[in-house]
Image (tube, rainbow, N blue to C red; front, side, top):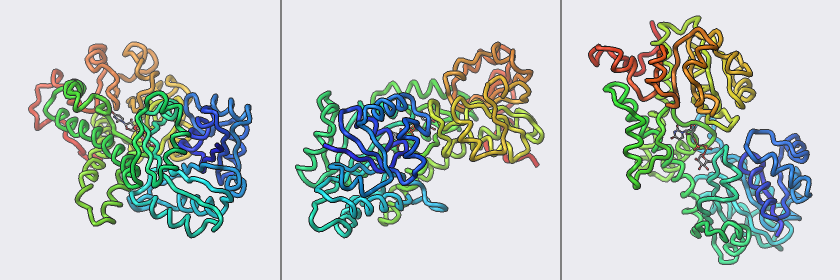
Length: 459
Ligand code: UGA
């Protein structure tokens, strides 16, 4: 069985390399010739642990090739996976389906032998049925081309592991033959008892968006409680631990902080609301609007805290540790950390950024900041330090170690990775998201005098 993968971003490049690892011959297609060139040389244009090794291994073995030619792909492949992007449409919440539609049409026009097209991109419910009509109208009359949907649940930073050993496989199919084909593709995982859900197109599409909506809701849920503990006191981490021990709730994705970002959760909850509205069901997904709002308020909170700790942001020097949307990634798409850095800059702060992997991507989007290649360079002349991505390097920070590199003793923990009391006992003023600031034990002020949310820029 020959496999092709259309689109070689995070999803496509990972899927292609992993299919080769499973023993298939794989041809990846991208419309960007530069990307095809670099992948063909075994060079990955983004940071993903374990993937460069897999890519090089299979480019070298000849099992994995890349092309820009739909003609080549259509004549060669038996199963064609579509993994192109579905970004948020400019100025709207809905997903931009241009790339998925274009890939499907180009593929259908060029397929010269019976084949199965399998969608993997995250799409609005109803897409597979719509694409089926596009395929029917564009394919050659003498070939049979079926469609299936097989959502992908990989996490950046764990893309290879998640693809080779997924926690479940979901396939939306219309015929038992297509199910058999996909069972063959995923035989290794199925042999290891990975659960397989065989369903219709709509359910398969919805599983993906529902999972991401649930994860986003979980994060915003705990962050909504952060807004309460920040005013009345209490420990947000202990609250998460305690409710997380209820097996029905679970502790994962209850880490309070500056909230979710990246190329998936934010755009997926907006696209889901837009799709529901198209279906006349605006109210069903309206709660996601609130989740989005809670999430974005966390970023404002980090800026408010910075302003309060410094008195004024104007002419202040701020060090940002971590700008990727999460650790083990160089992705800064909708990164809460970069958003916070930009807001601080807009209020007059001079911002210096250090991220172990995200500097290059961040500097393309926000060239106004200084980017440095070590933590020491970032903090040395800072008035305030913000830890915004939980890289191991920052988790390992100690009050003494950091104090040796800088004069300031002011720090904001945007990810709840530093032990508040330990830092305070060492003479630091530490503000953590989800915690009262100034801390309860440091002030006798009545509640009304405590820092309130979103105080806005000082007049
Ligand atoms: C997410 C989903 O987790 C994957 O299952 C899905 O396949 C993927 O989107 C996708 O749709 O392609 P990813 O975007 O890689 O994966 O990142 P996550 O690990 O989900 O983290 C998302 C954001 O939430 C990050 O900014 C992270 O810092 C934040 N987060 C996560 C929290 O603020 N608190 C938590 O407890 C967990």
